[in-house]
Image (cartoon, rainbow over all chains, first blue to last red; front, side, top):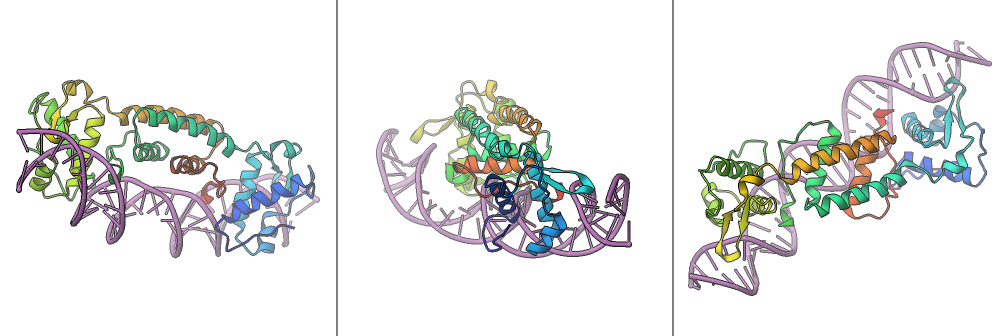
Length: 137
Length: 137
DNA sequence: AATTGTACCACTTATATAGATGGTACAATA
DNA sequence: TATTGTACCATCTATATAAGTGGTACAATT
C-alpha cells in the first residue's frame, strides 16, 4: 500500500508522510484505523525504523495520526481536516512576510541567514559576522 | 592604523568594519575624513580588493561611511550616531522574536531553517521537506 | 592617462546541517 | 516474553553557502 523510491531526491520520511496523507484522503485509511507499527513498516520497506518514526512523529504533530504508546499508531479522528493544515504551510506564509520586512529594512539575504542561524543555535549575539555575499557587491 | 589578523576565525571584512568603526569612535577618523581607497587599503593589508570593497559597502549601508564615486569614500557626517545602529543589531532582536513565535506554534528548528532557506532562495513552496532532525525524535 | 567606486564573471575552501543509518534501552502492555 | 512508541548514543554522506581570491570592465572624474 505504501511504497517509496529510494532513488528519489525527496527524503524518505517525506515520501512516507505524503503517502500516508494520500491514503487518508483517498479513504484507504479511515479515522481510527491502525497504522502498521514503526518497526513493521520499516522492515516491509527495508528502511531504517528511525526514518519511519520520524514520519510518524511529524504526522502526529500535524494531527494526522495519533500515537497510543504500546498500543500502536492510529489515524487521527480529525485527520481529514488536518491534511492541509500542516505547520509548513503556515510557516511559509509567515516567514515570507517576515523576510520581506527584513529586506525592506536593508538587510542582505546573507545577513538574514546568519542572524537566523545564530538565533536558532541559541547564540546570544553573533560576533563573527556582518556579511553579504561578496558577489552581492 | 588598520590591522587585520589573517589567522583569526573572524572574517576579514568584519575585522575591517570593526576597526574602522573603532577609529571613528576614538576620533582617529572624523566625519568627512577621507578613507583610503579600496585598492590602496587592499594593497597595504595585502588582501583582495573585493574584501575591502565588501566592508566599505556594508559600512556605507549602515551610514558609517559614504562613497562618493570616483572621489573616494569618506566618514559619514552622522557616523558617530550610527556606530551602534547597524542592521545586525536590529535583525537579532526582530528575528529572535519571530523565531519564538514559530517555535510556540510547534515548528521544529529544522523546519524553520528549511522554510527559511526556501524563502530566501525564492522557492514558492518547498516540496522537498517536512523535516526535523532525526535525533530530535 | 590614472584613479575612483562599482559590477560582473568564475573558482576554491571550510563549515553547517539535513538526511539516513545503526544500536541500545526503557515503561507499559497483551 | 514479545511488541508498542519513544529516547539517547553515535556515524556517514551530500548539499548549501559563507568567506575569500582573481580577473575584467565600466563611467566619471582629475
